Image (cartoon, rainbow, N blue to C red; front, side, top):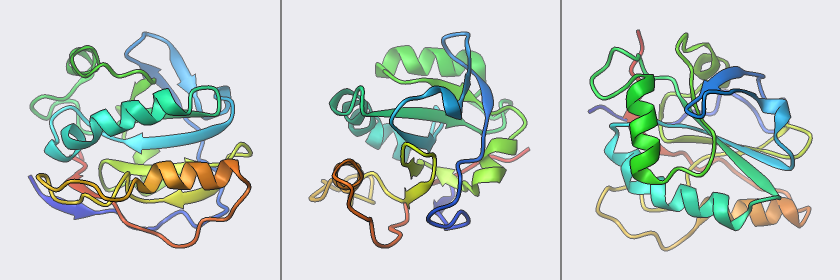
Length: 178
């Protein structure tokens, strides 16, 4: 495991790079199919940082259903141990994932977004403009307890029409490139 910090490649106001990716539900999904806000999270099956945040991520989807959608994208090399489409389906069942979980086999989507770690979240407004790239919460160590729900607070700000200031990097395992 290589601990990596997310980097700001897409700037605030940038358009969401489009994607057409297969989900664990067997359907093809694209960025423009989702209504409301879109939270794209680069994630994977084996990363302990993803495992530490998956409950928070599914709660965000529950809390903001109808107002925001999460799209989880796995861009890891499918040959990496624990990864690949069949392992994604198993992971989604075991973790109770309640949002589209998509495979980026070519890794082109991760490169377009500038994603480097898992989890690496990108929040877009209803016009698919980037409003925040950064952490889910402020618990950055595996055994730490969150005292601030960064993403939840930022989603609420966007829904109220407020601007989000700053970039608060996420930390996690590096994406496993081919």
